[in-house]
Length: 308
Image (cartoon, rainbow, N blue to C red; front, side):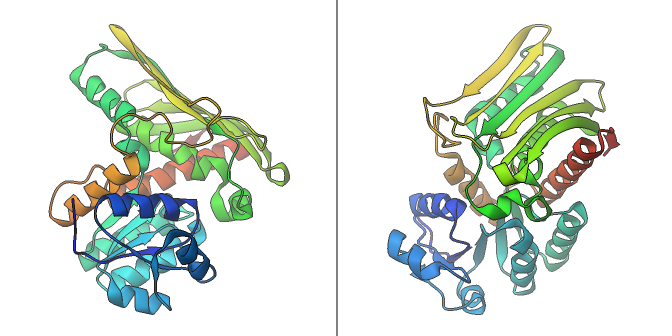
């Protein structure tokens, strides 16, 4: 696939590296800007740069926001005001109200806002959802999701006011997937083991769905070296769906995922949405996931169940 659109990437962290590789797979050579490290990123990865955010917006038709969470609203709103379509890494914002405001702004401007919830583009999770919708395993009796790893190096992730810790930044994937697969979540309870100084944020969530099903999410950031693992076990009256995702001692979340690289698949879906196709994930889905993560944070901090 090749494209003649101009794409701008805001941010120069690990997600910018992943998105850059995927854009190149799609035949797109992005322009990059960051308030601090664009030159270093360009030297390391051979990218073009813009001298300012205003210049970047003036040059592109799609803005790909991979910067820290607290900066997402600023960049998204600027792009929306300029009539530029947006792909934004999860979470859309640090709060549900902030995410809702972005969705409203994009809708009123007629601009695409595509939340980068990459797990929906990962074949095992997407295929499991298809199997559930087809009734392959009968009536679901239980479901458990796991996502655990050492955690990111950047210090802002471990400032929970800025990132929401592992619950907002990591579990948001499984909160989104649990609702996508199993039905609307109406109540969340849970516990946490949080030590930001040691870069540890472990949690266990119990999700109650509107159809009476209960599912769980467990894991987080260990703060100590360990392989990354993500997976699920969904048990039904006629069978079980399971996926363990781990590749030896890899700390790479996409290692071992079969099929097209999920980041590439995700960006391909966003480009198709610009042309009128129904996206795999909508702006409203992205905002809903932030509300779920916010409720989960309240639940683990107060040790009380929270309605969603």
